[in-house]
Image: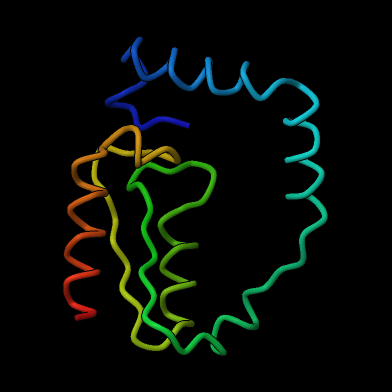
Length: 110
């Protein structure tokens, strides 16, 4: 879940563990079943016609940068943002960088 730079960060690891524990095992099972059963929607990405930013962590092992790049390439005029030193949990690993990327993207829309 985390980038190598954050694997030893007890604060972040405990935050994630607490979030998982608060959701409980039943919620985890429901989430996994939803993920397993969802259709592959990559074919419909070309139909997206609104401003789109694809954001991911550079060290995401669950959803790779290559997968995010594939999505961005399929959506006309989308922007791919890769957050360094972040894994699958980029908003909690690099909150300032994620917020800055969102702020820049939103400002360009105006």
